[in-house]
Length: 540
Image (tube, rainbow, N blue to C red):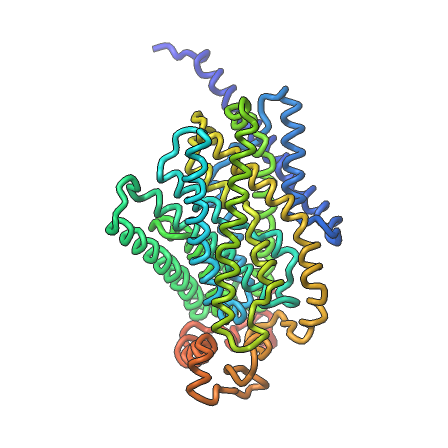
């Protein structure tokens, strides 16, 4: 039987061409990432710019250049992939958020954070869904079902507070930073869980049973995802504490922490849970236990490695979105009616503004009612910043929109094309315009943040999680002051400060049961190169 080489060579040539284009694309992306880092450094003190906006604008400029070079045929280097985003780019960002967060401030404000991040997201989603249901039906943009309208609510309820967090400092404004940061993480998780729940139900026949099942499924995903992250973090702490891996290789310690963190995310995705919630709480648990069980060199390495991975992933996402935003294929479907496209984007922006305001100010009022100390209450200026911080839409909204309205990176339906292009417009407008105004707004509303909060500045050591200023008044809670413990003086104080009371009992339980098993603060591992080790063995 003769073998026809002519049929093979064209395929090999096409494969080689495809591989070569992929290499060229990745080379260009790496070069652009380097450019983003250098330009971001040069613009560090700029009043308007930050690294997110810088990466987005560089991506847009690159897309324009590619569009011109291709003769208007294409502007993208890589097709936007939800898998790339959710599997490779998002986990290091969310994990580092949990790993670096100042846990004390986060958990003191946990009730408020959950109010904003979970309840607020549901309110925002409901308002956006009701708005688009009433308005889009009259605009004749194409066929959209009830599931599409609910998905739009979940997509545009997902905030992106990266721009604001790059301006805020958790040492200078600890309350504000913890609220914005905590709400952002819980919001992302809530939006994704809500989006997945919407996709898994038949919403054409909604009744009370379906609604209860939906709510039960939502709560199950939330709780199960959190528990999986906590258990994975505790398992990593137990393994590293028992085996003293750092005695022989700090590389193994660092590698095990990284892989266990990523494993928690992938296990959640495998079990159809929220990987965002899982990896976030895994990061919190690892920073509380596992990080203290490793050697000093591993602590320094992990802290900077996780931060670096998160920084590169964030920059990559904004660059990616910027380049993909000018993909001509998406815009051809709506090019015949630009006015309608602008109207759809304007409606969505207006609903985002209204949905955000509908919960930030009322929930802040409710939160303030439960707080006794004036330092813990959210004043009007802080409420405005919290409202503003959540107006920006970013990569999570993009990924969810592509998941709902596209197939293989493009769409052939007019209504889907409208939603994709409108999502791109909202993301670009909110990130660039709202993002550019973030620094001036915060400086205007909080002109003396640095001076007024100098007394509450936290150090980077674990002990800083238990300082008195972060707890409010010492009469309301338990705090460590030079080893002495201050406790609430009456049952009334216990009832009026439930968060602090829970923290006090958690501290007692943690010291008595958790730390002896899982290590943590105060655990001193055997460290290579320490005086005791050098007397016995030489590794280096």
